[in-house]
Length: 271
Image (tube, rainbow, N blue to C red; front, top):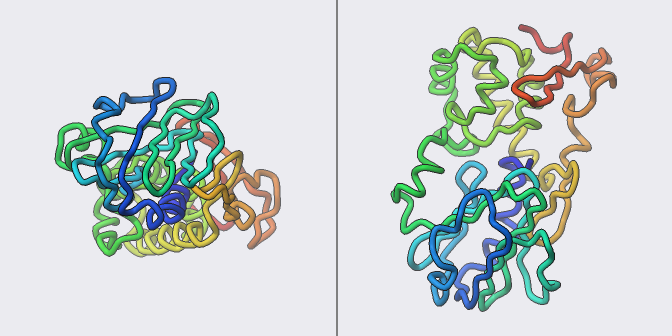
């Protein structure tokens, strides 16, 4: 699943190129996770003002309203001129004066949703409960620790939940917990203030590094220019079950938490 770094990398790869474009045509393919929320022709002649990100959502600000794009489990966005004709997995295409924006999603768990503004109930249903952005100044260690103290759930699951902090998906939660030396099964409420501060810094470090490396391409992720990411080549524990820990050489373990695979070093990460 594309996580926060992949969504941010995608945004950076086309935001400047589409800004100022006029929408000329919108075409929908097979139904996605949620409906568009308006007739496609409603978007024609609107201008693209900017592209932002909130958690794992791309927010395309229009001269009237906004589009919220979620990549789901397997989605990717492309943008440019001279794209090949739409294929069977291309389910949203927006032709603009500066190029064509297209969402490809083989599993169709992604979505493109229109809202009249960010406080619209439609937008709030998707964005309203998202936690603080981990790469923003609003993400401070003290508030993060207070949020953890309220949760009687394994710390890895709290990170994935998106309410204490948004966008720390499966790959980066495993990596951040490793850097902080915290066992993923540790109850969030039992994480001390000093350890929460370490985890806070690790989250920011891991996500920033992943953005720099273009995200992680485990299967078919690519940015809007078709470029793959390389963070997975530097992962400390993720997808390295049975391999020696890069720090202590202890074999990396894997467990299942909430139907997701978790990777950790039993020697470096303490309960």
